[in-house]
Structure formats: C-alpha cells, structure tokens
Image (cartoon, rainbow, N blue to C red; front, side, top):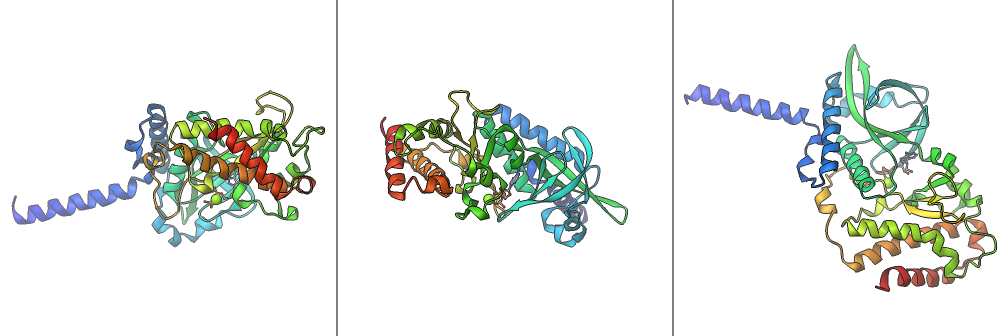
Length: 334
Ligand SMILES: Nc1ncnc2c1ncn2[C@@H]1O[C@H](COP(=O)(O)OP(=O)(O)O)[C@@H](O)[C@H]1O
Ligand SMILES: [Mg+2]
C-alpha cells in the first residue's frame, strides 16, 4: 500500500470507527453478554427500536447534552413532550417532577405515565434489569423504551428515555411501592404513597404483632421472591432493594385477606460506570442470601415501625427478635 493511500485508509477507518461509535449508543453494546435467549431477543428488539427512532432526529450523546440547554427546558410542567414509543408516536403533557436520586429524574406525564431521564447506558441497563427479573417471575414496574424529540432552530434532536406506570398509579390496585432507601422516618415527610399506606390496616385486627404468625403472611411472598433471585444468581445493588405492599386486589396472591410484601426492584444502573449483567449474575452462597434477606426484612420492619400506629406496638427489641426468628425459619433452617 502506497504511503498516501495508507494514510487515507487509516484516516477513513478511524472516521468510520468514531462515527459508528457515536451512532452505536450503549443500547447495543452489551447484548453479547446476555445468555438468556428471550432476554437477548428483547434487548436486540429494543436496540433496533432505538436505532430506528434515532433516525427521525439527530441523536445527542450524553457528552454533548450540556451544549443543548433546550433539552433541559422541555422538562417543565405543562410542556408537550414528543415521544416515539413501541406503540407509535405520541405527544404527552408533562405534569410534574416525581422524584430524583443520584442519577435519574422521573417526571409524571399525562395517562399516569412516568418518564425516566438519565444517561443513555442507564436506560439500557434499567430496561435489561427489569426484563431480566420479570423473566424469573419477580414483580417489576412495566417500563418500556422510548425516544424523546425536541427541536432547536428547525433541527430535531433525539434522546433515549423510558416510560412506565407511575408508582402512584399502583394505589388503584391497592398496591404501594416503597422506595426503601428514601422513606423518611417522619411520617409528615412521606410522600402520598407512604402516607396512604401508613393509615391502612396491614394486619388482621385480632393478631398479636409480637408473634411470628402476624408477620409470616406479610413476609413470606417476599421470601419466595428472594429465593427466586438467589436461585438465579441475582443480587442487585443495594439501591435496587425496594418492595411493594400488596393488599387484596388484582396483584394479590389471593391467599388470605392480609397484606403481602413482594420485592419490587428498580435502580440497577450507575451514572458513571456501566453495569454488567454477567457480573451481577454470580453463584451466591447461602450466607449471601441470608444477608440480602436480612437487609430486605429489616427495611420492611423499619418502615412499618415508622407508621405511628405500629411504632407504638412493636419496640425495636421486639423487632430484632422477630427478624431473627424469621431469618432463622426461612433461611437457616435448611
Ligand atoms: N415510575 C415511577 N413513579 C414514581 N416515582 C418514580 C418512578 N420511578 C422512579 N421514581 C422515583 O424517582 C426517584 C429516583 O429513582 P431511582 O431509580 O432510585 O434513581 P436514582 O438512580 O437517581 O437513585 C426515586 O425516589 C423513585 O421513587
Ligand atoms: Mg435511587
């Protein structure tokens, strides 16, 4: 190869590489590491959806978002949000900010929908985490990929997001999502969900809250979920440790009329680094399982004790004993 041709070849292949790198949003990058055939298929379909939708605008990578202040501007109450979803194009009014943590912002859109705004790789990882857990029988929020469009000087830009039901909308099904990491210990600081939950009867009225029998019907659906996650080698990051309280209604197992707690994990991704599914799926030891279970059960007890009517009845010493007994019964007895 002659020298100038060689330079040209090098230059053009670098250009091709960098432009394909910019185009290849993280959605496609880690599909190879997914062993489960169904999950892999779903994530490839999501990847194709994103790619197709990005062609309707100019995809802006995370790195270049700060030079597009107009993007930030569309997330204001009353703003009309243009979206491409798996069900087609739609325009929905943004109602309010629902919540935010270290790396994501969630907005309420009309139709009881929540829109998650975050780094592109997080959109992919959250979808993957939710779909993986759903595949093994864990209840998760039904989030779906979406692409958001906005215009600046007659140019249309595009970014990946996801949409799903708001946690508040589960209340219609007598179910209450508890973001365990964020539940304040002062009831006045609770959001609408915790406030409603704190006023409900979680236990049959005649039950003795100091007995294991009172807590077992509440906790045993969660125990089943923890075993499912353990048997599939999944221990999510601590932030994903969230639960849902389910009263009689469409999400309830139907056994009895008491409340049930189930795992309801979300928040699997990090802002600054990629999370590998293969790394999150490692064979776990039984002691990892009981550590995870203890953390979940402690959080559930802690939350219930912040509700005034139960806080008075169950002291922290009672709580410790009850948790110990539950862990012994479900996780050490084998
Ligand atoms: N579908 C939803 N409906 C209502 N609030 C939500 C929804 N999804 C997330 N949130 C709220 O947004 C906040 C941030 O979500 P999270 O996934 O924990 O992101 P972060 O990575 O920023 O911690 C949480 O407090 C959570 O309660
Ligand atoms: Mg969080």
